[in-house]
Image (cartoon, rainbow over all chains, first blue to last red; front, side, top):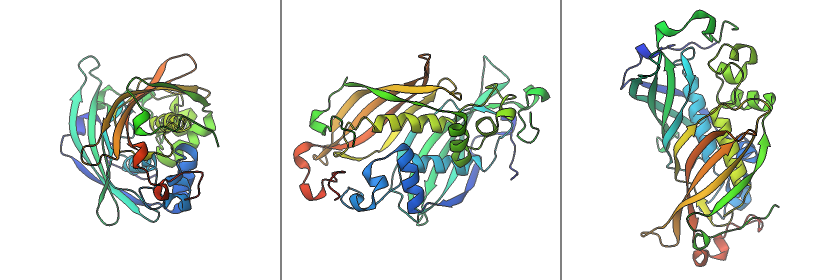
Length: 165
Length: 165
């Protein structure tokens, strides 16, 4: 299993910045995803897509979002301390993603706020920006993460992905 | 091909409301999606998930989002006039989605704004709410859609999904 920083809330500070790995999307990836979740013709039919505003097949924005977050999860910033995600804000698609494009991104911590009502946890806000191989920004979003503080985590509910618990 | 209202911007007004169909997610669906895009243990490992804050396997929030939008696209509200989506705001996961849950939702038009710089199009804002079979709200979001006005759409770039263009 790939290792990562394995942070708890105590370890995370605003302005921390991370670079993700990269994923290349081919035409089959784009069509396969879109047939499952976003079967609009400019995501599923290369011929019909030529008549769209994009001038050719483009990835579903949901696909770009999912790839962006897959690259983020692969950083394993807080795999044991994550409780869940409350949501996302300011999700924006800024350039089309086409077959053969290679996506990678940056993740910046923009806020860390400890809960007053549940002091064993807090909310981390991250800003995600995703780029293609030409360096063009194709996607951005703010994501919220509920993360445990280190000393509040009993072993029996640690949820360590390696422990089999 | 399923038919739908096939609206253009001119046809769309605030407070229009639509009900989606339904999709049931089983354990294999949840694990399969998560292995591709969100391989956190509480989405991929039923045994390990028991030790998580969720107490069992839950769907990735990205999966719930993608299913929500699949149900929306299946309504075919504006399949020919859609240009693309600028983004989403206020994405919120409010209850976990578990194996066997059946999701369905509502879509309400909250704003329609014609572009001043490009009068052949405008932005439609929709509010999406997704429920499980018990009627609990599991997800909500605001989605933006760039949609053409009817008389601004030349036939040669119509992008009619049935025309093969």
